[in-house]
Length: 329
Length: 264
Image 1: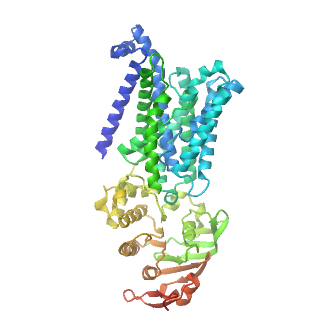
Image 2: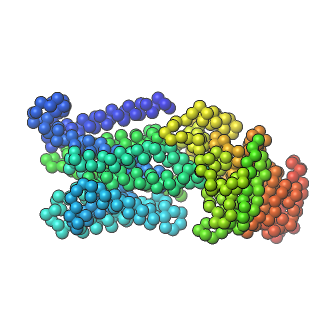
């Protein structure tokens, strides 16, 4: 058992390294492995400039993928619901609506304002969707949560469109809000959201044992001396923080938070202390690969990574919801 | 042996401000097996949940050793009182030993992993419940009876002097019911663990309980040893059922035989 977790971690780390390499290498202009080496040694050639230009988006891809994955794992843990994820619950659509409104109506332009608005939008949406799903018999069941999330996401998306479409000249500039892309990231943006991400990571790792206890049901958890409501609130805060900070920069990227915790659980079992770091690694890999795939598929332009994750994620979502339905019957 | 005294002092509690139990006063005798009986909806589960801090009383207090339980830090209370609720959730794919180990949560310190003491407690709990051989099995694969033993082992790993169980034998067939009650009796005799549980079967209750608490409509009707309180009148009052009471030929405890419209 101990041995297998070591193997899984090493494999995960190796995959991540390969994905980082791929993200630096491939794109509208593929530079090859030699180009990456050239850039690392700083020889000033054209290839090395191409690679250097891809460094910020690669770093952001790693961070954003990890954040979305952990955010999804946290949301699945607090709702005890296998299909919870920032995009399915409409949380990151809520975040982008607030940001788009801020840009259009209040002409916000600093990164700090983006993050604040994204956070507010994500928090309001999370509370709304969970409240809506809790109505009626049985509380927030997987199916009801998915339905209210889908409804909220659709409604919010149409609002985003309503706000953006009339502004033809700015629409193109904001296009990435609709689908999600990590291509626009710059170092100064990353530096801005980094404290949010680190705080989110720290809270989630501290909470991991408590989330394990919460997984046994509210009654057992309370009997074991867990402050159920307090742990839920902290985990929700961390989840919303991670997803909002990422969304503030990248726009809504779907399904990363849905798929990766399941993969981690499949490989490492139901212990959150393993699920969280493994999901983070897989999330980074998935987002980088999606980004690279988007660059390859959309040549000479690019396909937003949010579209690629949705393409890969939709079938997984359908499989999961079918499984969840069978279990709840 | 332990001398923790658990008591309800004028407790009123329920859901959404609608009281299910009203002004209940009772003291749980320590080192004993205590069983709460009563008809569906009489408030016996609510009483147990209030004891275990899942429901906050709207009036009165749950007292532990003369102090209000609500004033104790949650983890400290969880080192004295353990709870097995009616329908706990089994995390997908969890192994028996890992599930039992989660009973050590009240002893966990921030960012610390399991200590040798923790591992010892887990092993001992699995040993008492006879599930050591299943340690590496997935809980999903177990039978209902085995699964219930795993949950009780989790509560044992918590190493509490008081154990509260909400209908631990429901959904089990008769042989598993007897097996679980035997194991709980072992625990009580060996460790002096005070056991408080809700049971549906009156005959098994009166066989295994040292003390019975009979409830009706959110109030305590009677309490005492089964010999003292099980009478046709009490069963009529609590369940609205006519019956005759005989002596259990095996345990010499009171044994009720119900009557009905077709048999009397």
